[in-house]
Length: 63
Image 1: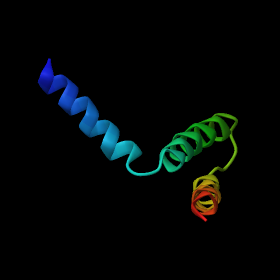
Image 2: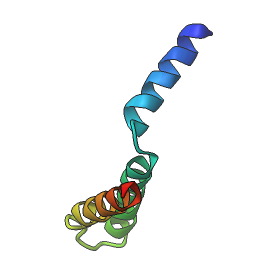
Image 3: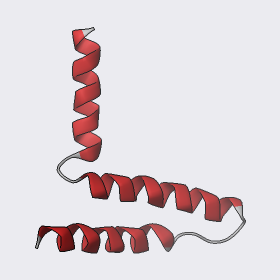
């Protein structure tokens, strides 16, 4: 049980890291890209846009 907990905490630390906002944005970008692709549209541009917006959001909260 301890090993499972340590593995889960390690995965959490790897995925979320220092900023939960960026992890949330990554999940949102993947989800939005999947939805746009399912609609039959081109979604190659969506992940970089979400990444830039998330970075701006993250840096704005620091200062």
